[in-house]
Length: 404
Image 1 (tube, rainbow, N blue to C red):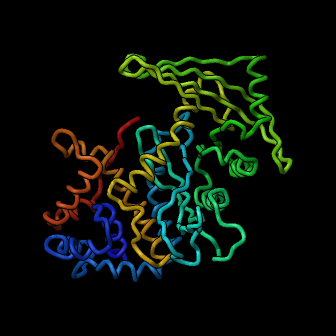
Image 2 (image 1 turned 180 degrees about the vertical axis):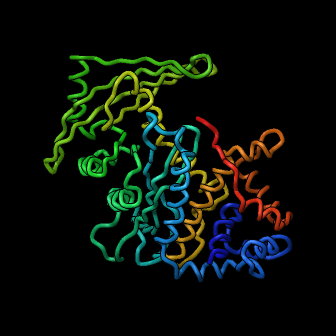
Image 3 (image 1 turned 90 degrees about the vertical axis):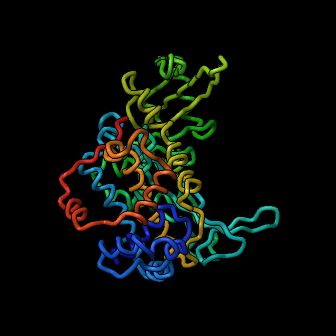
């Protein structure tokens, strides 16, 4: 079983792109010898063997493997330099489509009809630890799917978030978290759920989402304006102006009372042609705002949310991982392949950003697809010797990530 799951991770780590490439690339020459050295088996399993096995395993057990990766990073304080306000790990949650079909794929497909044409899809809601340096480690996954084909109300990101939050709180009960979320999550039940789990949040506040909060923010700003202007970037070409207010009362549709803070950031940047680009951002938060922390909360808590889209989903879809490729027609096996992709992405980021690669590489270390290609060639052309295995098992070494 260890070999079967190792090769599943290797499929994504080496960015082979399809299950059949396991048989074409990993079942000959030094690749076979390396598998034999590690697992005492005659050769690497075939891609169809992976599929047949993953159909029968528990998805939760594979999810636990990814959770243990994060456990190890937290326990060894690898992520400490990236904590917001020296305390919180910033967790972005967002959904994405991972597969689309013209006809039903399984009883759990989501479906949408547009201009008379119905499409069927599978989606996920991801919670990822994100950092200012561009890391995006999958913390937990919730699959968005219908319970049956004839449900009256389909599953959605918000309902999946409530399930994900409960699982996340049970698995990481003492992890200090700040959730950074899209505007669809700026609702009373999400505020209440975060309060119950002792999480803080920074959520996008779109125009018209919470009108009573917006009105009180503007009224308080007129009575007691709070401002901070910060310049940064090369030659101070970025100017940010912050407005914020605390202790804004909000009563949701369930008559639950909440106390919120609001922060606005007007970001003005000077381009190379001396033109100016101005954007305005606004968030609602449970954190106490002040002139000492408002910039960090806005930039490293609010605006950092886009990392889950760019370094997370976009990299996995367009960077060689093949996130949208259908690795199995079986729903259970497809989920296992998805979770192994998350493990592989975590491992790749640790290799790419860690100190060992910088020490080993001459000149600029390889990154992205180039690093995956070199790993692939090394796996096929270099033998793992008993001395190497003994050295790794001795394991008295330390890996440090690139600091923020």
